Image (tube, rainbow, N blue to C red; front, side, top):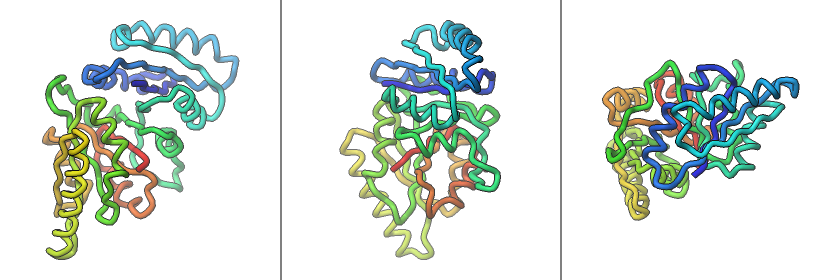
Length: 257
């Protein structure tokens, strides 16, 4: 598998390297890592080359197959282009991303997640650390599922990552306005869970009375969930997802259904 890691020369961006080692330990196939750095100008090339070469020798990367790319241009667009060129399976990057506010402007991480053709795992340097999950202990990815959009095919990006990293999936749905709606949502979650389980992934499901953000925060705090997964595009669920990104400061996977 191939993981792309965008860097900008800061220690903040490098905080993804420890989560990388946690994921590599769980991978079922050899991992190739591409470090990509977007330069402001071509004049920065020598400094960038030296930085990336030095980074390849640190302990977190020394045992991996690591290649480097240095490019010039718009950071998000160039990162997405490199991900496509290298056939990346996952983009792993650090960001303070707290909410999707069009008035404030999108962060680079959000823009990358929207334009990339592969899932983007965002690590919050100031947030909940990536868990030290042993190799043979399940790592759980909680997926926010809209009641009107329960679809096994839409969750395949998460299923693929679950296979790659030996992870379990937890489908999180919200309660309806009455018992009949609850039953319908739970039945839909159960149907999807069974479909996904046929593919060899352990899947559980839960309905919550609390807000999605409150439930996910509780699951993260209790160490029941390591990663929260949110679908893109965010039409129809932008308020809920913005709230989660603001209030649940945990490793977050943004994916296109």
